[in-house]
Image 1 (cartoon, rainbow, N blue to C red):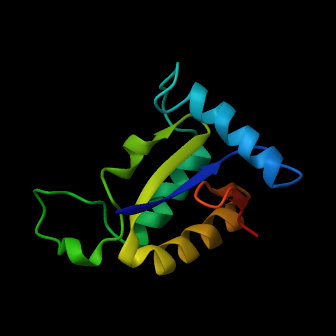
Image 2 (cartoon, rainbow, N blue to C red; image 1 turned 90 degrees about the horizontal axis):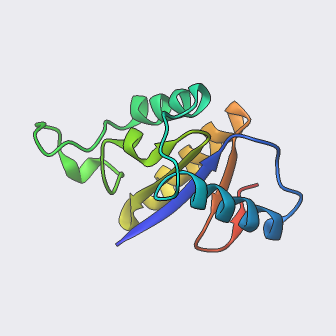
Length: 121
């Protein structure tokens, strides 16, 4: 089981409803949608910061996967253009999402929780 977060580049939606609509538009257009393009520079920077804290999930690596919070990898495969939509294993979601939200805010990115339909503070 995993917990998902959406992080994107752009103006901050005015409320949770606007964030849900923005996420739906981005999700339709980018990952799994009509276009798959290279992640923006800012999204790449964000992913690099996440990976500096925890390595990418790699089945061929000798890393202890029990310490890695990502539900799949490489993380960059979950990014397209201005949108990054990624999963965290449920038993590590609190620590990982707290860090992910803090890093997103530091970079001026929007962080959205699709499970609750709410913007991160």
